[in-house]
Image: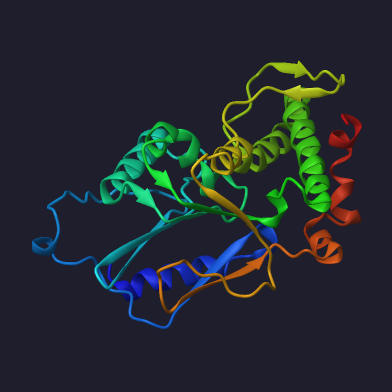
Length: 275
């Protein structure tokens, strides 16, 4: 991939719906050069790994004999054949490219953007991460963010439990709910657990929450929580490159735009009764 196509890939990512989560847009005032020819560096193998439907951008910058490596998301859509093997192969390719990532950006909490940090965690453990940028909605000291996470957790646990209770004549609705849950982790198990508070909670495998917690807890990384409207961000030692945070919005009115209206909620009566 040449430098121009790398930049276009990041801009395409930034044009996706900002209401879904944190989105990063990168602009560059300098040419983004392809990797130097093999004779100027140690020889290595760069296999092409088909990722399927998902997002994973490894962007390498070369300036004045130095390298900067930025990873934006790393995931594949739930249900992709051999997804774990695919993400492990991609992580090995990243490790083969560099043993140190200057920046990892997790744009938002969807499995097709984060699964690799769970499916290939043992490989990412072998790669140093200097900085992690997460959306402000993940900030542990932000009261509004904490409320949003609590509400989402309750909604997801309710859905995971409710889908197990749906009768056979609700197969279509069950499949729809399972498709929604696919964005947040591995398929729910057939068993249901009860939380200490007494509410139903379906047991599940790896989740997007675990992937975000993994990045936030990397001991060597400086973690930042990004908000739209702030001045453009940059990386130390990287000239002429700026990062713009496009979302999610901090306005409560705008955040509610993603919630279903009254008409949409009429079809959710069954799920409401399970809460």
